[in-house]
Image: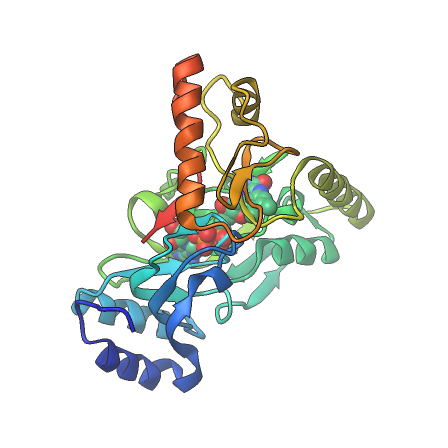
Length: 307
Ligand SMILES: Cc1cc2nc3c(=O)[nH]c(=O)nc-3n(C[C@H](O)[C@H](O)[C@H](O)COP(=O)(O)OP(=O)(O)OC[C@H]3O[C@@H](n4cnc5c(N)ncnc54)[C@H](O)[C@@H]3O)c2cc1C
């Protein structure tokens, strides 16, 4: 058991009284919860089933000043080999409800974005096709305004239900969310998304499906989906493409330990087998150094670091 600066057993007992015995895990390997398949153990991993349980868990962490982290699908995340000393609140297994009201699709934060996109298609609603291949959750997608091809979350989001750092719950409209390229108020103001409503439009299901199939094909052709990764590792530097800069710097296929730059898409750092978080960090640092040295461009990671 890792050493923690708080009463782990007492906290686990308290959480069990809220979410039940089975939904509180101790020393949970984060490699099981990230698409990189990397990450040491989290002290506590808690799975709330609804907004009330989520709010209660957040309150307790804040009152007791225990570090916590809200996790979606772990598809934009590199967790340290040492793991995380605190509470991971995993939303992808519990907050998974979806409701449709005419052209408004409301998803709880843990719903996979792909599932939201698929459901919209089945309902004959257009607008979420761009999201069909993004392996994140609805909450994580709102946090960073996920986007691909011809769309992003900000284009279709109507409002989100959030929990503020004070514990208060509020519904915020799209105009109040300051969404920009891979950012939002959810990110800057430390909000927790409980659910999101997407304003879609009625469309031709065949056209919607064809668009999704086209995006899927393009992804399969261009991205190393057969290897664990967190998608594009770097943000797009203004005026450049990350993948092209990395290729031009001669780093396509560069490897360190078990991690490397994909030969299929140089914008992806991939886990080639048994990579540690330290390996991935070393690859990222090397790319940053080389691209800065050769082209004077700073490569800012898109992937988030934890622990
Ligand atoms: C193969 C692959 C392809 C990808 N393609 C794309 C792409 O085309 N476009 C794109 O934008 N991204 C892409 N990504 C990256 C990733 O899927 C997105 O960034 C996604 O939005 C992350 O969501 P998540 O649920 O996995 O978030 P996580 O990785 O679980 O968390 C990321 C951040 O979001 C926060 N967060 C998660 N849920 C909530 C919540 N409910 N409330 C508040 N904060 C929350 C976390 O605290 C964390 O800081 C790709 C990733 C992979 C592996």
